[in-house]
Image (cartoon, rainbow, N blue to C red; front, side, top):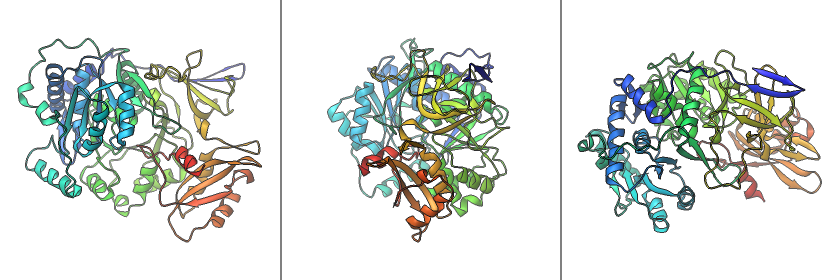
Length: 555
C-alpha cells in the first residue's frame, strides 16, 4: 500500500497475519519438531535428519553446554561450519542453552576470525576440522572457555562415516591438522547418555528482545560489523517471509535446495527458520563450486524450491548436465543477496521453466525487506515491502523524496536489528528511528521498489551520476561476457571515470568490441573508459562481487 503526503513517498507493507505468540526461536523449533516429527528436516551428503532426531540432538547438545562447560546464558558462541548437518543441531542446541550465536565464515583467515571473536567477545566455538589451524592461531591470542570440533560425517552412520572421512583425508593429501588441546569432539557432546533434561534450570535468557544472533555484515563497503538480531527480529522475519510464500509452498511437503552458506543470514532465515517452522525439507550443499557433485545431488533429490544468488544461477545455466535435469516439481526459485541480472534471469527461466522471484534484504533486517509477489513478479524490481514494514527514500540532507525519485532507501519494521554490537559510533538509524540502508532506490506509486545501486558505489563523472548496476547489466548481456564489475576511478578532468572488469567466455573478446557494444546501449558518459580482463573477480561469502576490493587494488 502506498500513501502520498505532500509529494513525499511512503510505502507500507500489509498487516502481519498470525495468531502465533511465540517469543523465542526455541519455542518455534520445539513446536515444529513435535508437529513434523516424522518429516525430513535436513539432508546432506546422503544422510537425512528428521525433525524427531533434530529435537533429540539439539537437546543433547544443550544439556552438554549447560552441564559440562562454564558458558552462561548470554555468552557468545561462534559456529565455524560449512553447510553440514551439524550446523542446525549446534545452533538450535546453543540457543536452547541460552547462548548467542556468532555465525562465522569458515573461509575467514586467522586475522579475520580473530577480529570477529574479539569484537563479539566470543567465549566458545564449534569449528569444522578443516579449519583447526586457523582457530588454533586465534586461540594463541584469545583463549576460549569451550572448543568443540567436528568432522564432515559426524552425524552419519558407519560405514558411510568412515568412507566420507577417508575421502576428506585423501583430499587433504596428508595435510593433517592435529587436535586442539582441551577441545571436545561434537560426537562426544551428542552421546546418548545426555538424553535427559539438563540438571540446571532452563535459562531465562533467550526470548523477545534478547540477542539471538550476532550476524556480521559482508564487509562490501568496510569492516564487518555485528548486527544484533533478537529472537523477536528473526521470528518476525520468518513470519513475514511465510506470508508472501504461503500461497506457493505447502506446509510439510517441500524440498528446498540450500547451496548458499547457512551461516549467512539469507539462508539462515529461509532454511533454518522458515523451512523448519513450516516442516519442510532443506538439502544442504557443502560446496556449490563442486558443480559435478552439486548436480548429482539435484538429480537424486527432486526439489520444489531453489534459493540462490545471481552468480550461482549463471554458473548452473552454463552446465549442460544441469539443463538436462527434471524440473517438473520446481515451482519457486528465489534470488537475494545482490542484484539479479535480467540476462541471467532469462537464462534460468529458459533452462528450468521457472521464473526467478527477486527480493531484497540486508543483514541488519534479518534480512528480508521486500519480495516480489509470486503472482506478480516484475523484472528489475525487488517487489513490495513485506508485512508491517515501512519504506521511504531520502536525499543527502535526509529530506524525504517523492515517488519515482532516486534516493537512499530507509526502513522501519519488526525485523530491523537492535543495533550494532560494540559499535556505538556507527550510526545506522536517524533521529526518527529509520534504518538507512546505503542503497539507492526508487519507490513507485503502485507499491513496487527498484534498487538503483549502492550509495557508496555510485560514480559521479563530470557531474553526472552513473550507477554500476546499469552498466554491468549492459556488459553481461554481451554473449561473450561471463561476468562484469564496474567501479569509479579518480580522474583529474571528470572527477571520476568509469572502469570495467570483465570475465570473458572467449579470448577473442577485446575492449574495443565492448566499448562499441556499450555506446550503442548507453549514454556516452556511462560508457567505460577502460576495460580490464580477468579470470575471476573478488567476492564475499555469498558470491557478491567486492567492488571495494577492485577499487583498493587499482588505487
